[in-house]
Length: 181
Image 1 (cartoon, rainbow, N blue to C red):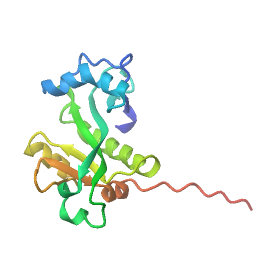
Image 2 (cartoon, rainbow, N blue to C red):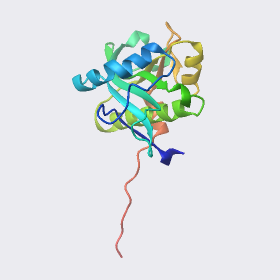
Image 3 (cartoon, rainbow, N blue to C red):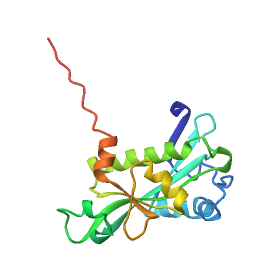
Image 4 (cartoon, rainbow, N blue to C red):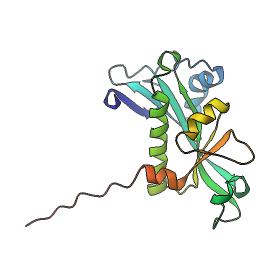
């Protein structure tokens, strides 16, 4: 299944945003009207899921950006030994699947890709304490909890996937060791 799909950065000249409909007006509108602007301004990156044989049709998408989280918002067990300031974090701003594709685990595929990208960011570009998401409702929050996201104490719909969980899910690949004899 994974070989039939590509998850790539939104390309407004190649990807047809107008045909996408996930059933949520706000998420459709973001992809169709705002994602390009956020990408160009460096505010958020939008990644789209397409089939290899039909690369212009968007099946789903997610956005990633950075944010700052106040130490007091974190669950108690994650506050230890952290600076008493705002902390850098990654944010999964949106995740949506076209109505015609819902129920095919594409949301899982996109979420795992987002987590993999954040792991790469932590290892190669910038440190973050975790990946955060605002769930629209308790049903959506339950989806994220299946992947290890933890609800924050003050708002159970704002969830965090700790840095340690992300890095454990995507261990560093060891370089192949070549030996000559």
